[in-house]
Image (cartoon, rainbow, N blue to C red; front, side):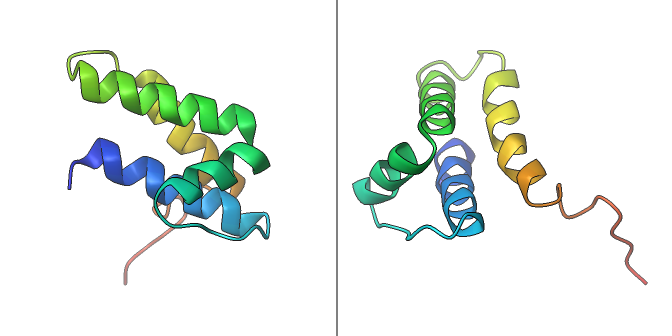
Length: 84
């Protein structure tokens, strides 16, 4: 699976679960995210679409949308993580 199709799906699931919303499968995941977080849904959808249509585009909008979801839940896993 292409990374640009995988990350928005996982980010949507994380955003919904973090706020106590139900998940959906297929198009329902997108619909549930749009209802719960319309701005995030728009940013994720538009950035992923742009990245898929033109892989040479700047990834900053896509990266920022995914990082926003991670920041809501405490940041990326490696922040403060140490392996012993």
